[in-house]
Image (cartoon, rainbow, N blue to C red; front, side, top):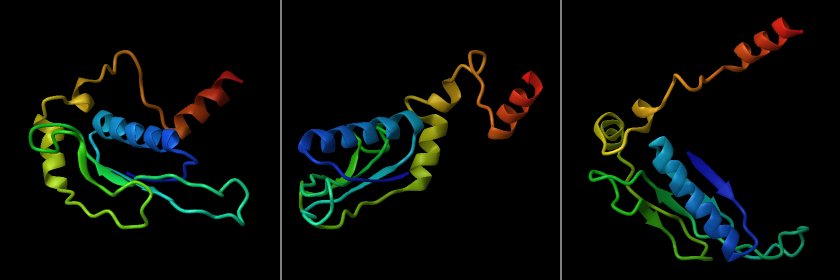
Length: 125
């Protein structure tokens, strides 16, 4: 999952980082954040930007112990490089410490496609 973002201050940038780490854990995916830094004084509401881009993973024994594959320094125009092993991720989804895809309670909810929802609306009206 790739998440480009712009943040006006450190608080917003940290919110993006922590939300990205949460999505990596909950969905058992790698998440890449790409934030813009610097000043765009000629663009409305873009005169100040704050970012720390990174690559985040689920936290487990075979993956990163803190969920961070790689991060850049805050507010530096640079490129983040990190190793993303999709085979490790596949094995983690099957046999990880936590397996949210297998542990979900499908008796409590269902995932519906847009077509199914449209059909329900048509039937009710």
